[in-house]
Amino acid sequence: MGTISTRVPDDLEGELEEYLEAERLDRSTAVRKLLSEGLEEWRREQALKRLAADEITFTKAAQLAEMSVWEFAQLAKDHDITWVSGDHLEDDLEDL
Image (tube, rainbow, N blue to C red):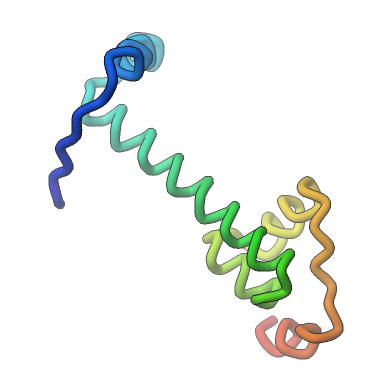
């Protein structure tokens, strides 16, 4: 397991302290949890963005988001992303 060290602004550190108290976590656990949640959200945003730009198939986008196709379908629907494309339909069907 790697180690990450960083300096944060005082206001961000104050928010982190509030989070630690509210979630009853130690600092290391809290930072790992927040980093993991942030990267999960980033992966999903990237997958949605690439799908909307017609760069990747729906199935590939679900894989990038690390979600099942059913979960990703709901996420795409929630973000009003049309994911049925004639260009990628055959690729998606093959992947399924």
